[in-house]
Image 1: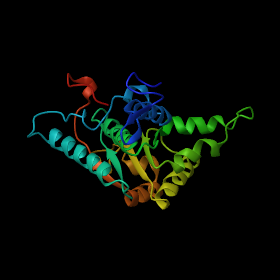
Image 2 (image 1 turned 180 degrees about the vertical axis):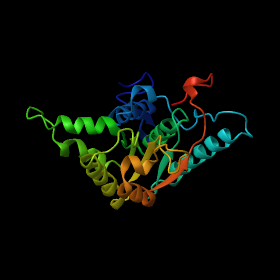
Image 3 (image 1 turned 30 degrees about the horizontal axis):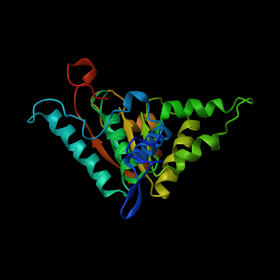
Image 4 (image 1 turned 30 degrees about the vertical axis):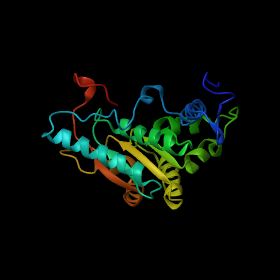
Length: 233
């Protein structure tokens, strides 16, 4: 809706009509809605990501470095290489991923997409119901074609052969099309003791492809949810 400063979303100047800022704000809100960013993460930006601990600590340095790398992805877009943000719960992986998405939407005024992988598998399985109005292609097309995509919680559910094939389809399609993909996972590539690593959760084929399309960034830290730190996700 036009604001009090403009008429029908436009401002008259000696050089002619130009779009009012309210028009851009309204358009941005539509693009954010279209991007399917969950309400919990709507506030997340690169600027309000605050590393934990003292500036000399490993946690702070790791998170500050991840923030710099995320900002570089934005400044260098379009870029062929995405990010694989790895770290335990509550260190800000999704915060940074959504921050990149927000910044690219703001700059390019083109919708990206947020996709929770566990929810994606469930949604596609629901299309197997003969009464479903959606098809697998309906659900996958925006994910395959979005100019920038966040794939959240990779490895959150151990993959079956079906889900591995589906995930490989998504990853491979975006890789061959040179589309930016930002991925978050709680699983590392090496882990002490008997803890599972990312390859255990997604399989060797997918982990191999991710090495070609996404720069791994390991983020250290403690879960902010169990501390008195400022909220981060």
